Length: 563
Image (cartoon, rainbow, N blue to C red; front, side):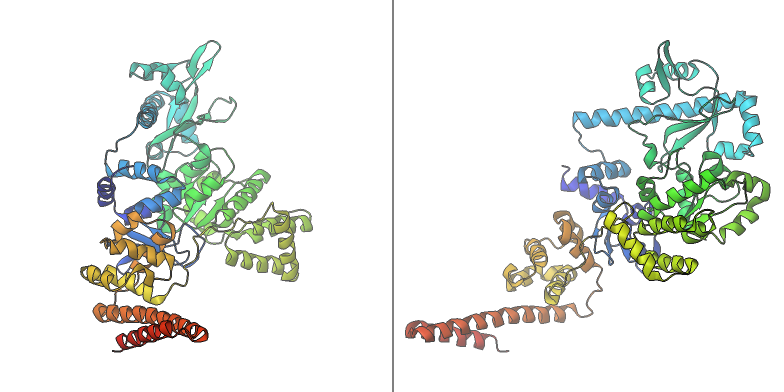
């Protein structure tokens, strides 16, 4: 585990607002920044980030912490993994064991191989009239070709392999990158005679390729196999270029393929992304929730496109996203519609996307079965407010009482398959004794009085285990919020960030004295009550010696408590 000084160095180099902004859309709110919490579903932003304190806290689900705890919770990774990611981001070198160094070295080699492969494919594209004609026919101009680093894999046996080995890469490493394949006759290039689409991760590193056949070979699209740097279930094509636009617009356009995305970007819809030849996954939903809460599905108008839209909506609703669907005229897809009709016509469609209920109501077929499909989708919505509004909408469209829709939802919840996963926020803020909360807040506000205060009260004066545990740490001389956070876990960390965001007291000295008086006064009341009970027991036993001793103690305690 890195030392405290190393952790502090990482924190000093990474601003929490910059980090969180990579995952959550934030807006300036006074001295802080606010956005929709990534840890639970909400409509009104309650997730707050403090640049001055370098902490975050959600007042909806009560989660809080610093840059490390944010990454741990968001990415669902261990603390050491979060430290490693943030250290690299901050340019801080960590001491690593041999196994870690080997794996990091392998990843670096694969990333370099992909970077050089992009150069090779672009060089080959410049020589291929066939590849140029294909992209020109699809309306992909030179600017877009450069923007998305498009290329061409020549129709040769091992041109890429020879190019990469000449640069010093071993054939085995190129094989691990998925760019060559082992056959009965030797090793050959995976991609041949295809227009090449580099696939970038959100940081902008090339991690894989997609190749489109231009001579009728099957499959039409071929993607790189999965490697230690590429998991297709967790990658979205175009996200590296779309993420800023998604934050700005507040929503994402989900499309079906590479060319749909590129055409959309050409026409100014730069918040467009697509999966990599797979159905949408929970990982995709989690990935996009970093940047926006609203999704518009922009799929083909054929049966396959409608089926894909239904499946995608089910998955994305479960991820806590609000999903709407864009419909096109018959036999149109996003790519063809944009090229034929242009930006304004597409923008007009975007002004009125369909809710999932209206989408189902437009489908042809048995109305009863369609209604059940719609209820199945509603059951997957994790936002209960949104779910309720869709129940009402469906009952209105079907002209039936909401009661019957709700009853069907209950049946689904019993059987399980369509039940929406429950949101997983931290335990809601518990009702802690106000005086104890104020003491902690005032100790943070008046650290110069910490020694004096901790001498007047003790940990036993705190009834709540969390405030008591924090007080013990502060009694040991730790009053800096970031240092405290590094020593706390779970509820203690959540409580501390919440307290830190409370407004400072106008007259903290007086407030502190009042709190101490109330805290010690409460303690005195408890002691007096205990003495009164013991006095009654001594009287009942007629133990005069004990009775006189207890009466004297009782009188002294009452006298000491008078102002």
